Length: 242
Image (tube, rainbow, N blue to C red; front, side, top):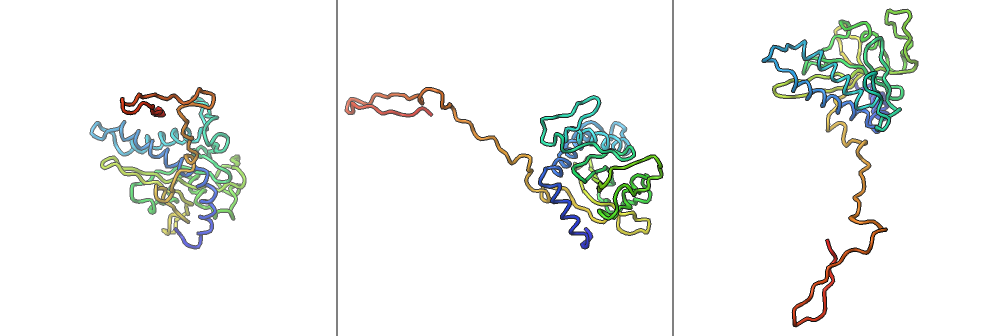
């Protein structure tokens, strides 16, 4: 992470972490990776291209599921924690999900080489995103080479970089602000790993349902069992049934 952009990272983190949005990204990537790893087998002839396209497609579907945004085939989940909060906000056909002013696009990278991405060799859309200078460069100023394309005002577009290996099964997931690196320099203005350690506890699961009693206030008195003592003790013992 580039140190002089620390304030921007903290601002982003403060907006996205407490909502569970970052945990949702990680949940979707984990589920997508497990699905792809269980469905494709290199021994059966599947090549890296197959894994790449499939991983991207399945991750898109899992993100739609986690955020409850829905598709034409699967309606939105209006009962989920992100209902009405996270929306689909694609950019020039590139799948995107937005919470507030932050939109996330996807980029699959070679495992272990997230800092070696050359954005100047990516699609015009990704190149335009990599030209951002964070809040100082409103998205309406992005030159996507399409005169009729109008982006969402005041939106900061981040990239979710994802990768995985099958044997052994390992995953990489990063969120960052890309930097157009035609000069051969850094690929990111800032980059942050989304791991269990960096994210901490999931705020979506903080509200734990209270343990219900075995009976309610409207029930009869707690049942008891009476035991007769031995002949030496003629009184009785009252024990609450557990």
